[in-house]
Image (cartoon, rainbow, N blue to C red; front, side):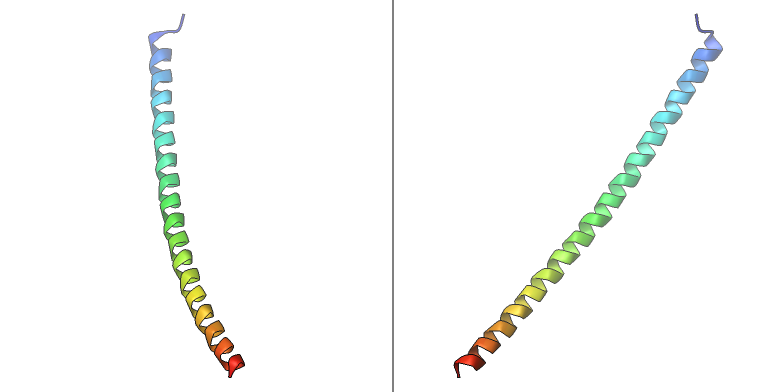
Length: 66
């Protein structure tokens, strides 16, 4: 049978482990939020590039038909 001191040590270790897990989860959450923001920026840039490309293609098509 485990002594009270051993039980107390195991409880403290488990508490430390749980706290470490919460810290890792917070770090992962922050990283995912940053990545999500970056993906939104990339989507906006791609949309802008697509619009510019459409304009260029329209101009080229107009010049070809003249």
